[in-house]
Image (tube, rainbow, N blue to C red; front, side, top):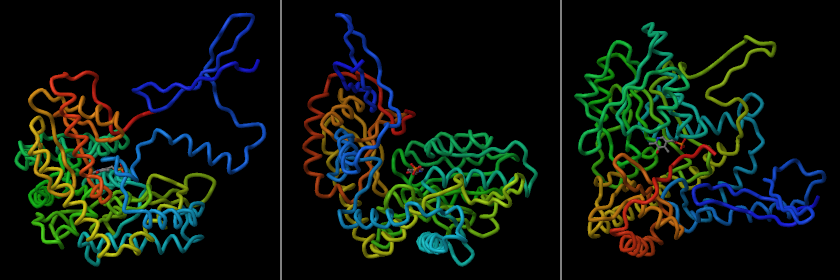
Length: 448
Ligand SMILES: *Cc1c(COP(=O)(O)O)cnc(C)c1O
């Protein structure tokens, strides 16, 4: 029976709509949830593309600077280049670079460019991964394998501040490494003394971030790496955010504490390119201090009927698209391009921080050390109610905690919309003041 009525619903708490088919049979109505199956005959390409475009009607408008999370934009020209390079290599397979020497070269050059930015030196070696999460998974795996091979550790542990990214927890879960979280100090930086106390003979990894995601401050990497070195364990610096901003902020004269391979004891660093590298999604790099250390992340087997199979990361087949896009965007922007984009993002982050300081009802959690700004509400302003109120007007910030707060990842797109945003923020503060908390927080990552 043909549906009489098709309703599309989307509840406030779910991003995915549900199609409900209403049918009438002799006056009785019934409703079923529509399931999609492969269409019997295909639809024309232009029709399919217009359906896809229609689906994104409610997506956050990141090209207009509405996303202070999840998306980064360096302008139409850079985005078009990334898209073009991506499209050209989208079906090339990085699983086997013998067949695609282009991708071997692209990976090698992207890793070398990143390695130079983080002062990797001649011995450093790395791989491209599909994102910060995969880079961190590989850091955890490499540390576990190193501990097992060099020291016979069977019950590995890693010591990390409570601020270190959730992806480390995923690594602990996937690879059977115990996560020992150490509370951060008042200023949200890693507590070095408490970290020292948490290190034990089973420790394989100490983690610091530059900067950490939630409050945007740089951990005391020299002290953390020193602890790791004395204990003979790996030290990963998570520069997924800062890897493409801190080197340029340093060149711009900002006082940035040392955090990269110039610090003895740092064994690996992750740098996301699909964030402040302003390239297409699916690109990050992990650099190890040496080829020997890098060896601990690779996997090779012959234990099946298909011959030798090796891979550098989590994936098997891997699109060359994001790799080619990263190479293209980095080569196009160059140091001058990134200096310009970093200067813009930094200036905008500082203007946002100033505005928050000047607004009754808002309080900064920390002085932004790079381009991330975290703030909360005071005087009857609930931060999550504020976040929801902004979201209702199309502005997306992370709702995070503890402590309950909002998080803005400021990038180059925000310079031209900041005044508009500050006006919205001011009215949202006035709207939610005294209104209470209401519903709970939204989340930065979802499972549906
Ligand atoms: C974004 C981020 C990650 C996770 O990276 P994905 O690209 O989202 O997988 C890890 N650490 C930090 C500091 C990040 O900012």
